[in-house]
Every structure is written in structure tokens, then in C-alpha cells.
Length: 192
Image 1 (cartoon, one colour):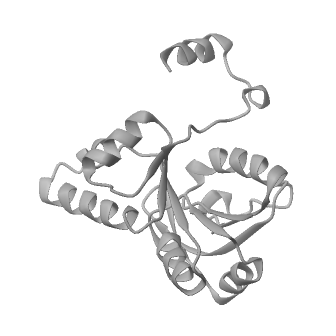
Image 2 (cartoon, rainbow, N blue to C red):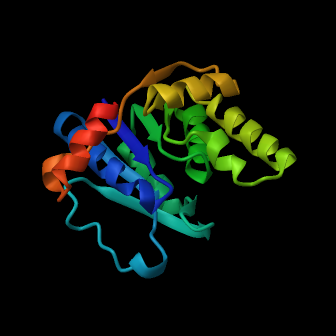
């Protein structure tokens, strides 16, 4: 089995990195994602232990990069010939994954990290909140499956009207690789 993972924001990068490190030990996996802009545009993928294929991107808000798959990106995906596409985004690359799925008859899954009602609540304009939530639910329901990073994310998704199968798989990082305060780690583990 091969796997394709996508990411739309640098802020989700640590989790994606940890997942990709695990994937490449078991399967043929590549990360397809947008180019980084702004102060990190000189960042290099050369030191990563897995292949990264990047496409053009447009800055979209403070955290997001809206991918615009170009011919090179599309050709590299086709050459890779994945068995499954795993998208970590609800924007451009997920829409492209749907087109790819239709042509190549492979499943597309996405991961829900966000408790959407809490995020959209900050918009403070109920019609806009409702529109945004309906749009997200509609897009997610086009997937073949959903990974929720917590039971709360799963319950929230179901309450919003997401009807495709949802599996809870918690995010994880190698704590030993980071300089965390052990007391804070212990307190957070006790809350789980």
C-alpha cells in the first residue's frame, strides 16, 4: 500500500512530520503539500527522512496556504500512483484529491483536527458561521472516511452532520525528541 498525505498549514507540520516518519517505516509514503511562504520560504525539505513534493501556494489568512497544484505536482502524484490519499486539509488539495479519486478509483480520507463550532464562533456573525460549517460538512462528507484526533472531535463532527465513517486516531509525537517540562507533560497525560 502507498499513502499520500497533504497539509495546508505550517502549524500542522509537526504532527504531519511525526506521522510521515512512522508511515515510511511501513509503507511507501510521500508528502504532497504547498510551498512555504513568508519568513520560512528558505526552509529546506532536504533533511527530512521522507520525500516531499511541493506545489505553488497562495497565502490564505494568517496560518493557511491555499495550494494550487501545478503540472509538475500532478505528474509526480500520477507517477507515485497511491493506493489511498490522506488529506490534512479541507481546501484546494482536498478538492484536487476528489478529482484524482474519480479518475483513479482510490479512496480519499481526511483528518479532523478542529472543533469547528469553536473556531467559527469567533466570526460572531451567525449567517457566516452557518455557511462556513455547512461548507466544511459538505466537503468532509465527500470523503470515503474521516480520522478524528479525539473523541470530542468525532462527536462534534457527528453532531454537525458528518455521515461518513469516522475513526478516532490520536495524534502523537515523540516526546523524547522535544524539550518539554516533565511536570506539564504529566499533568496533560492525567487529563486524557
